[in-house]
Image (cartoon, rainbow, N blue to C red; front, side):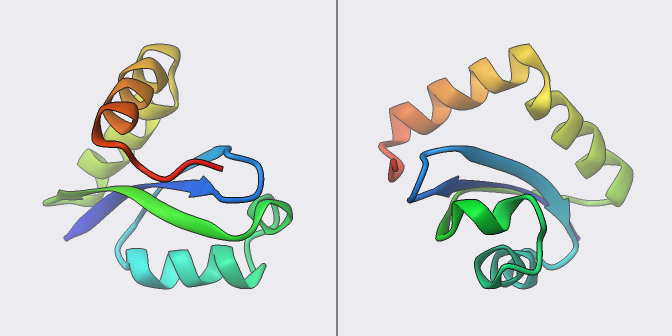
Amino acid sequence: MYYVYVLRSLKSGRLYIGSSGDPEARLDAHNSGRSRWSRNHRPWVRVLLEEHTDCPTAQRRERYLKSGWGRRTLKKKIDAEGCPSG
């Protein structure tokens, strides 16, 4: 299984969208500072996790969520679910 995840920075409120075969390890990497861009926005909490059957499908979904329409859709979904903000 592959996953698309969305993290929210508790420091800055920014969102980070990524995909991985091991989302727990990726969250640990973001919070420990091993991911270059995200280290300045720690700590991170996961606000969305989607499961996909294969890597190409997960990567297409990740690209969509990073697009303008995808970000709008994502923001509405996160706001509707009352996910933690920064």
